[in-house]
Image 1 (cartoon, rainbow, N blue to C red):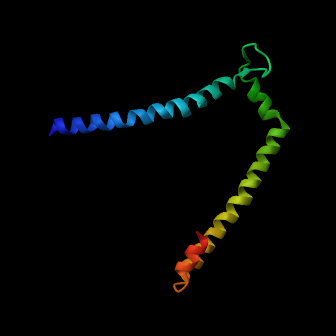
Image 2 (cartoon, rainbow, N blue to C red):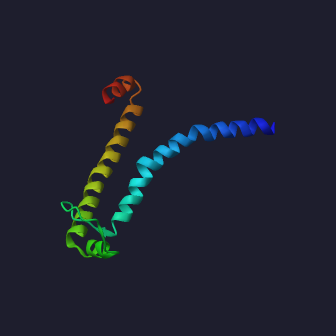
Image 3 (tube, rainbow, N blue to C red):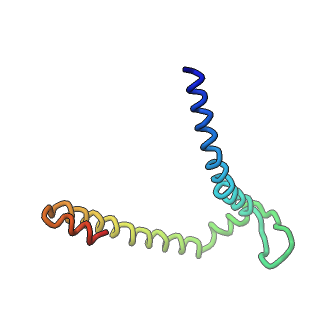
Length: 111
């Protein structure tokens, strides 16, 4: 029995390796590269290599008035769209469930 379980585990590992490699190449690497580049300064139109500036970019970000204004606007937008969307979705769901006679029709109209 031990050999069968080991064989199944091996095949499971073989089938998951491509997904893990795909994730690492297309998700993990760009995230790590973006974090690394956040500690550098790069002029986009220059051919010079990026210059290491440490935490200076983060200091500038958190002391910038426009950053805090955009963060506030993002939260207002998210709350202003998310809350009504949830409330309306629940209201439509309650309407569809409560109308037994028209339930199929309302589901069809909704979808």
